Image 1 (cartoon, rainbow, N blue to C red):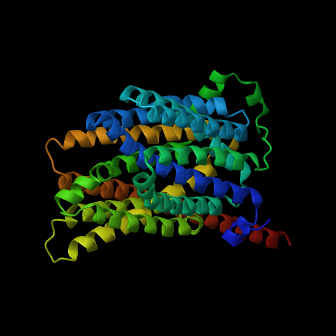
Image 2: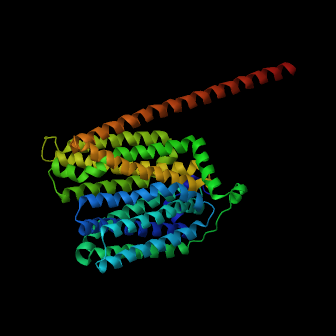
Image 3: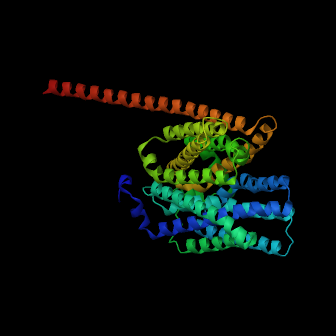
Length: 444
């Protein structure tokens, strides 16, 4: 088997299973992005209320937060491939049902909440199954490269879907855009069906005999004793919190302080996505060459700097080009380092979590990440009552830089401690060798 350093993208793509996995990821991401844009238009079209929009999107996160930790324990001992296929088909059926009701003029805000909860509930089962499935399908040596490829493919699908969604909605209508999402679910399900997969047996055979509640409890105990997994959860939550102001206030900030329109926002996001692709391409090499904690902390510091640059860019009166320079720089930094962070988080997660616990631990991890987004958005909405978008985004950037700057200091302290410990062990070994040599010479 090749060593990790010699594994190239071409080597990975020669494997039929991985090609099919990547194709399904691209199609799935394309459909999700088209649906997200279409659903945004649809919500406002049906309700005509920003309040209803906020409520429906909050409900989109809530079931995942509640159900994910429990779903992981249920998924762990079952056939992940079947679960992914079934949940893809069910999600397609649910969306198709909603499109029919919309076409018949029966859709209303309460039905939208119901269908949103149903979709998110099914996704809560799909997510841990997919995480465990990929781990079982891809050998550890290939995982960083495969993860990098999946991220690149996902970013490219996001760009394509975002560019085409507006045209689809304008020319064909929102219902057609959502039917495209339905089609992508069924296409992905059939692609996964053709992936050769054999469900692995647990390394610990006693897990097969455990009840659901025992599996759930053991999963939580496992997380508690794995310090790195707790660290990963904290980092994921921190990123979502610090990026909440940027995500929530991007459009208002561009309008109020950059004094630009949707074209400028598209310009910013296009650079962000392009930079994310570049970041995805180098994730595998970065993860292999550098320590995770150092990479993660440096990325967080740069994202903090980017948030400050984006916040003040529209109000710096250096010249006509200055807003573009500030916006472009911030978007490139957020795209690149955000992508690197996401990639190394996933790789470190795969490295540190034993195969027997992947579904359970990933579900808890995703639940924390999901919970932090609506909480962060709620805090931002409260802050907007007293502060403007410039102040909020700038503060979040400074806080982000300070938080991850602190983690960077701790990472270097930890590195130096390990280095000093290794040096002391080496010296002790050398002294023992010398003593043994002297004793041998005396006996001779």
